[in-house]
Length: 177
Image (cartoon, rainbow, N blue to C red; front, side, top):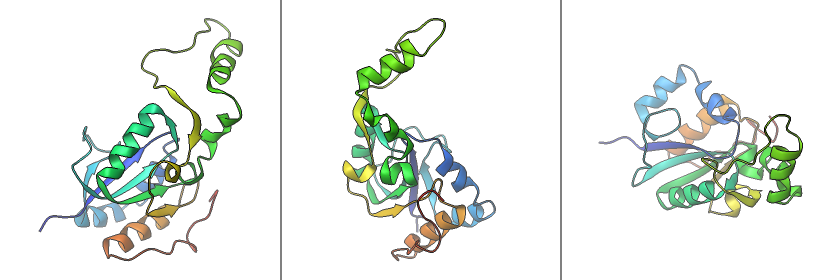
């Protein structure tokens, strides 16, 4: 019998949620016995699988690339988890939302730079007008607040989902914790 497939995705965030995932330490070995990690910035998989049982999404939807990626992932995931304050509320990435994209790019790359000011136009994905929480663009099944969520909360989340239960994380995490 095959193991459930687990994926993790990093959109516009700081990677703190993935660092917290790694903070599960020796429990990662226990988790590895229960799931197959099929896609993640922590492994070498290049393509999202046909179907993941659980996908943890870190970060806000801030670029056209993020939007395309999360829509594809939603279509290929049974249980989608917004992991961390940036995924749940857009948190830090949304700080740019008070400015129009063109004005923000001019401010950051032309007006506040000494040396060779220039707006990057290669490799950098096109920004959306606003950074958005994941649930505003696709259906989310479970929300895990925290900046980042503690490793204990992530482990509890995954073990509960693997047992077919809806986890109650209210005692383990909160916004900003």
